[in-house]
Structures are given as C-alpha cells and as structure tokens.
Amino acid sequence: MRIVLLGAPGSGKGTQARKLMADKNIPQVSTGDMLRAAAAAGTRFGVQAKPLIDAGNLVPDDVVLGIISERLGEPDAQEGFILDGFPRTTRQALDLEELLDQMGTPLDTAVLLDVDFEILMKRLTGRRTCSMTGKLLNVYFSSREELGECTGAGGELVQRVDDNEETISNRLAVYRENTEPLIEFYRQREKLITINAEGSVAEVYESLIAALS
Image: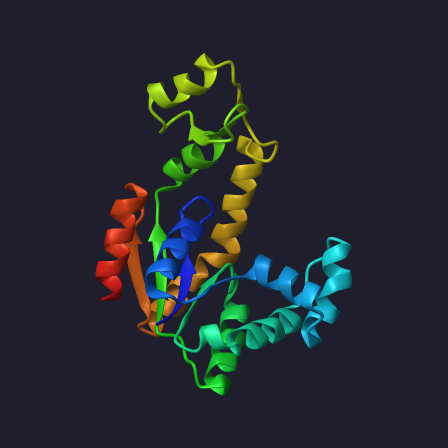
C-alpha cells in the first residue's frame, strides 16, 4: 500500500496517517520529520539539508527527493508507505513519480481528505490548548462540558499565535494555488480517491479504510 495523502491544512492528514500507520504497519513519511531525521543521522542528503534547516531556509526539491529515496529504501517501507506533506506542487509530483518508478515502487493511490473551507477555518482558528492539562480543544466543536472542565479548574484556553484568521487564510490561499492542482494531476492518472473528511476522526477513518479496500 503506497499512498500520498492530500488535503488542506486542518483536513486531518496527520491524524489519519497515524491511525493507518498503526493498523497497517507501514510508515508515515512526513516531510518535516524525515528532513530532521536525515539531518540528525548525517545521511548523504541529510548533510546537504542540515545547514538549510538550521538557517530556516527551504530545502531544494532535489535534496528532498534524495532524502525520500533514502527513507523509502529502509526495511520498514518495503511493504508500503504513507507520504504526508510531499508533493506540494505539480512539479514535485512529477519528480516523485519518476523517482518511485525508478525504485520500482510506483504509487498506488492518492487520497484526498475533502473538507469545506469554512469548516477548515473553524477547525484552525478555533483551536485552543488548556493551560492546565495541555488538552487540545476547539471553541467551535468541543462540547461546553469539555471547555468548562478546563476553565472551571482554573485553566485558560490558549490560542497559538499562528492560529489567527489572517495567517490561516494565507495558508489556505497558498494551498489552493500550489497544492490543489494535484487533485486533477492524480485524477488524470486514475489514482485519486476522495474521502469526505468533515465527520469525526473515527467516521473519517472508517471511510478511508473502506475506500482503500
């Protein structure tokens, strides 16, 4: 099972990838984690990436692809993998397609977690962390009881600095411009599966498993 997960910020890609990884015993290959791990391990491409990561600069696509090839060559990825966070552009998707064909591990499916943008805004701008327990809550979707448990115990509902409406709107605009075209890219290759990701985590996962089966 070789999968690319697609979806806007807040669509639940990371959550669903972790559940799928645990159930199917295949690794979630998250671009950010993978880059940091390669840099720390001092792999061939990790050495090239480290000074860029340390400086907060973007890592070029050819280095990212090199790190992906290193990661997918490891034993735990031989039965499959879940790519999360790459590709983000059509150019990256073409390069990834070429790399996977060279490795003899072509992609099986691209899964789109589809969520209405109004719901995404509420998911992201409504996120709060309880200062007492560290529990992640949402002012739009968490129950009054859950929110009250935090505030009633003397805790505060803390919002991340980058979870404001302007920043979120910019992130979604970048997604629409750069990453949304991948939907048509994979549809043309008859690899696209679309999942309604507006339900609970369990409901979305049930739909995901049914579609992959």
